[in-house]
Image (cartoon, rainbow, N blue to C red):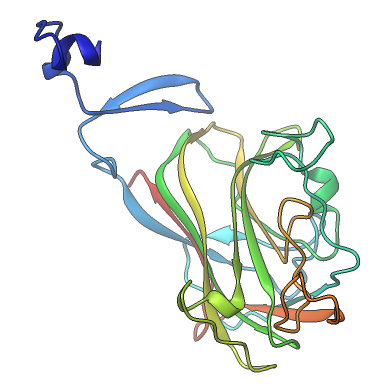
Amino acid sequence: MTNAYVMKGIDNGMASERPVRLFVTGDSKWVDEGDWTVPGRQGVRCYLHPSGKANSMAGDGLLGTEAPGGEASDRFTCDPADPVPTTGGPTIVDPRPKVGPCDQRDVERCQDVLVYSTAAFGSDAGVIGSVALELEVSSSAVDADFTGKLVDIRPDGTAINLKEGIIRARYRLSRERTELMRPGDVCRVSVDLGSAARIFLAGHRMSIGASCRSFPHDDRNLNTGAGPGDASARAVPATNQVFHDSARPSALVAAMAP
């Protein structure tokens, strides 16, 4: 259709079509829009709200638009010798057949995965646009990875991965410039989850999982500042903290309907 209009000058109606076409998952339909980011959507901050025990899906991690108060931070240990396993997602390196959307409950049972979830939506809620996880963090190591995974939790508990991303702390300021962390110091990292077009149906919950890597999709971080190809380097476990109080808020930022 594009070639017929542009190359051959055939008036096939393409000039009157909207320039953006999206397939919205969740309710499985095509949507035509006039621009990207989609008009009528705004960046909503969904704050992390645990009480210091958001480890695994059995924890107390909450996700909501109310600004945080004096909540305690969450801790998890990242051991390069025992990484969080890749389960589904955009990967071709895992030889197992688990790619694309997969149930994440086995992953979210791990103690080194922090899980934060909204209450069940009373009506359909859309996320159409960019998604990022902004974290206030510290580590016992000089370098650490931080991941984010956007998940749709169905009423039966099935947790389906939608988008994911990772940031290596040494690149938190720029991809062209490295700066190691100072152990114990708090810094901000932003995990880019890309763009989403998803309707969370009524009764579903939106969830974010935060951890240190997804292996083998992501290469091992030795937590020492050394590269994975340095044969002489030794890996060290790192204790990482995620803060979410009024002075150091962490949040999922997503383009949602007002």
